[in-house]
Image (cartoon, rainbow, N blue to C red):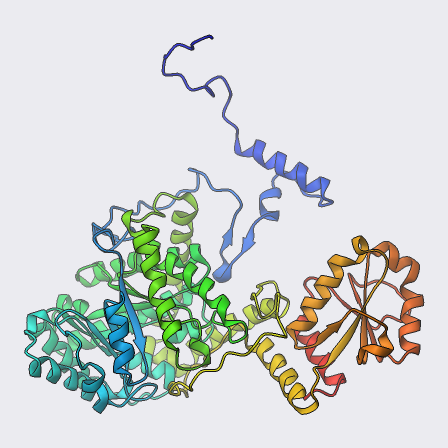
Length: 601
C-alpha cells in the first residue's frame, strides 16, 4: 500500500478552477440538446426564475455576486438579526392567535408549548368584556399578551392593564403589546377617522410605567392579504412605522421612546428563501430609518404563516405549507412566530389543529435544532444577494408612498390599493395558468375528498383593502360543482378518450384528469362515451397517434353526442377538435367555460 505524504496539498490541487464561462458553455450545450437554441451568454437567463418586484432568481451564485456587508448579528444594520444571540437561547417565541372566548383552548396552548397569546378583541374577535374570563388561570407575568382590537384598542388596553393590577402583576414584569395600529385598521376597513391621541397616551403610559409592554403594532398583513408582493409589504410597513414615529414624537415622546413602542408583523410564506430575505431586509431597512431619525435601529419582528397560501380544499396540505413558512421565519430571525392552524380558512380551529400548529414550532426548535445556529442563511450568496435586491425594491416602494404624502395619504388616494391590485392581477394570471401550482387545489385535486367542517369564526373587519387567497378562482369552480352534485346527485363529467397503449397516453391522461378535476369536473376513463354520462370529451395520447387517429376519433365522439372535444396537447390542425388543453393554458378560463356549457351555475 502506498502512503501519500502529508504535505497539506489538496487532492484537487492539480486541477484548474472552473470558470463561470465554462459553466455557461456546458449549460448551453445541454439546453441545445433539449432543443433550445441559446447562446452561451443566454444560458443562465434561460434557467432563471422571474419573481415579483422585478427580481430574478438565477441558477448559480458565486462570490462574485456581491452584496453589502450584512454586519454581525445584533449590530447595525441588523440584517443578520436583532439580537447577538439570535434565537439560540430557547428558540423563537411561540405565539398563538385566538379569536374566540375559549379559556380552555388558551390554557391548553400555554400548557403545551405556547409562550405568548395573540388575542383578537372586538370586531373579528370576542368582546372586550370577555378578556378577563379568557385569561382566567393565565400567569400574566409569564405569558405575554398581544392584543388586536381595531377601534376598540383603548378599552381593550385599559381592561388588560386593569387585569394586571387586579392580579398583582408588577408593572415591570408585564410583557406584550397593546396592539394599536390605526393605519392597519384603516387598511382593513377604510375607516380613516381613527383618533391617534388615545394611542399616543397609551404609548406614553407604556414608555413611562410598563417598560416591557409595547403599545403599537406595525402590521404588514393587510397588504400581504390584499395580494401585495414582499417588497410592497416591506415598503408599506416602513411607511407605517415612520408615520407612527412622527405621531408619537409630535405627542411628546422622544424618538427612542417612540421606536421602542413598535413591533413589526410580517407574513411568512412557503417560499422559504423569499421569506428569509424579507425578514432580513426588513431589519436592514428599519435600521436605515432609525439611523436617519436618531433612534435605536433594532426591529422586533413577529412572523405569521400566510393566510393567503391557506387552501380550503385538501386543508391537510396546509400543514406542509405552514412548516416551510415557520422554518423560513425562524431562519429569517423573527423573535416570535404564529403558526395559523391548517383549518384556519374554514372557521374556528379545533383542538387537533391547534396542537399541530404549536407543535410545528416545537419540532423545528426542539427536534430539528433549527434555532441553535445564529442566522443560518448568512453567507449564502443567494440569500445575501436576494436580501439586498429585495431591500432596494422595498425602499423604492416606501419612497413612492412618502412622495404621496405618507402611508395615510397613500391609502386614501388609492395608490396602495392600486399597486397591490396590479400585483395580485399578475399573480392571479400565473395561478390561473398553473404556473404557480397549489397542491390539492390546482394540482392533484381529489373530488372524493371528505369536506372538513368547522364552526364559523368571527367575521374579520372589512371595507378596506380586499383579502385574497391563492385558491379563490378554483374554489369558485369547485363550489359550482358541489352545488351541481347536491342538486343532481352527480358531478359534471368529461370523458377522457385514451388512444393507443399506456406508454402513449398515460402522461396526457394524467394531465387532463388533474386539470378538469381542479374545476370540479369528474373525469371518466372507462367504458364508452355513451355510457359515461358526459357531454364533452378530451383526447389523450401522443403526437404521433394524434396524427393517425385524432380526426377519426373526434368524429366518432361527436356522432355519439359529444358537444365539445378537447385535445390534450399543444394546439394543432386536427379536424373536428374544438379546443386544446396544455401546460400553460388558462385553466380557470377553460374550466369556467366548460361548466357554463354544461349548465353548471
